Length: 318
Image 1 (cartoon, one colour):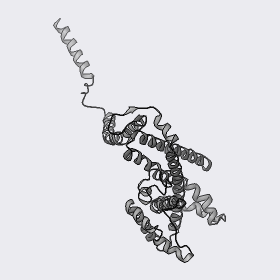
Image 2 (image 1 turned 135 degrees about the horizontal axis):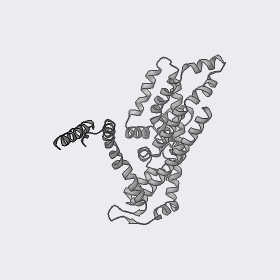
Image 3 (image 1 turned 135 degrees about the vertical axis):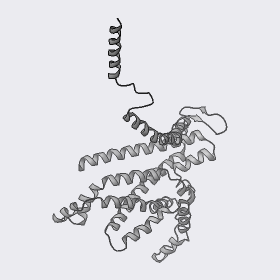
Image 4 (image 1 turned 90 degrees about the horizontal axis):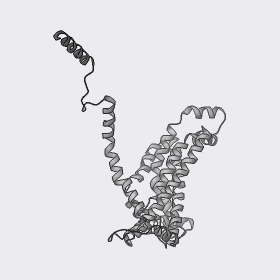
């Protein structure tokens, strides 16, 4: 009996020795540790966006269905805020102004920045120094830009003085409904075009020279090379510039607010100004949130359309 029990104990000991030791719960697998380290590094950024970006967005959407004056508790009113906006002529005029401003600024910024990048890419003497000088405009504070251009566009300012030799005595750039919005669009392009010029220049430098050499051998001139080589290969960059410049234009506030105050009349009042005035001047935060939701929806639809057109262009040129 003793020998039998001893042999059984030896067999049980061998089996226990053959089994791998149980891993303690605090010693994780290598892949699991890598995953947890990655989550740990990304978690602060996720929390930051959740608290300061996506959280306020969700709260604004919720607030748009309430009546809230920042004093009493929000009261649910359903779609009344959106019905008021549809019946408000100031909102409709501001919506049209915003769409005109987005379209005009985006087109002018894209064309001007692409033209500047093409001019710099010719590598004429002094081109790099001109690029540095132009890019300095993008480093100026937006308030300083607005104040300087408000002085330059005065009816008796420097711009009018420069136009006098051409028979133009006085132009009310910022006080006329026909010129106020074009003037602000031009200043916006002057402010942001140098930044996107650098983006376009990076895209031009990334195009292989072999394509231009092959097109030149085939007898293509400068315009044909630009049309059939440069533009197709710059489509991703053009898409980026269009979308980002449109987003910047949609959120613009200080430029029309400082230069014209939304006037003359409501000629330069955009949705961002209307949001500020409705929320903080008239204490109607529910209606202001509804306007912000409308602005967000406009930009979302615009971005989706741009992405659809871009993907279609990629399939055509692919």
